[in-house]
Image (cartoon, rainbow, N blue to C red; front, side):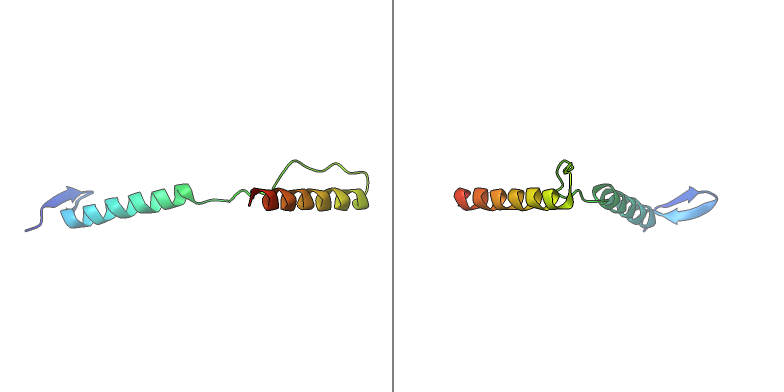
Length: 73
């Protein structure tokens, strides 16, 4: 019925080897595609002289992006 293989001194069925192979493949591919996600909004650092200047630059960039999205639609 089931082909048995001798591995490390134990008999292992072919169905167990198939499940182990598929499990290793799927877990490996899941782990390879996971990891930390880079934020799409992360841009170059803003080198502002003060907090007010940094806030102004960020607000300006947000409003420019909103206008760009509005113009695209």
